[in-house]
Image (cartoon, rainbow, N blue to C red; front, top):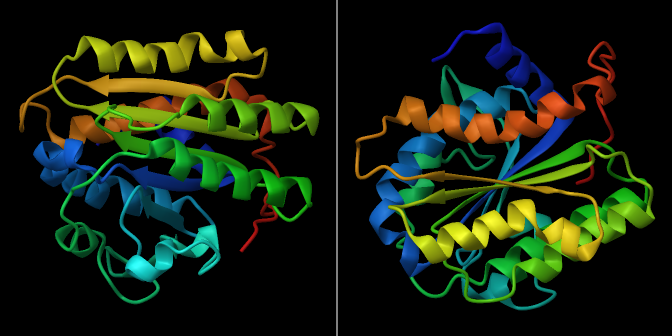
Length: 258
């Protein structure tokens, strides 16, 4: 793993963020599922060590509670995934129920549609409401792993979240969404992400909360080590810009909602 001062600095700054991973488990992701599993097995422990209350892991379709968990009002959005993953046994990262990250992916078979807009919208709405209520002060770092083929409107929830933060006069670093697309070159999908990254905030007249990056490799041509750097590189792009606002010399942990 890279040991440059810049990379180490980025990792250290992650402690100022509440890191959440949202994984696309639609049928579009089936060819990349093993790659995503391997990537998460590497990146999750590193991020968890730098997040005071552990990382959260969510999927577009899968819910830990099964089908009932998808019924509106059955459970809070925070519990619709695997929150506060931060327990270690040696170097092994475990969920609160003692499950390894890889085991979660082994139980899931990518299928169905990618209603990313609905899922990402629910998470962003929860976060913004907690922030407005004064229950959440840690900045949000939402990392989305996806094939980039969306079956619903992903623009609206991103604009809504950005506008909510603008109206609340939240710091510019308060929330960032990192869209990491897996798969071979695909003009339509690449253009979709490029638009979300470069043009969406201009059209909406809001702050820019989206960064995107694509992995254009095939199979194992790109190592897990390189994948890790790409994902954290996307995160670091925002972190580096916000570094002066994060007060890294302050050891007091930011307020985090349950």
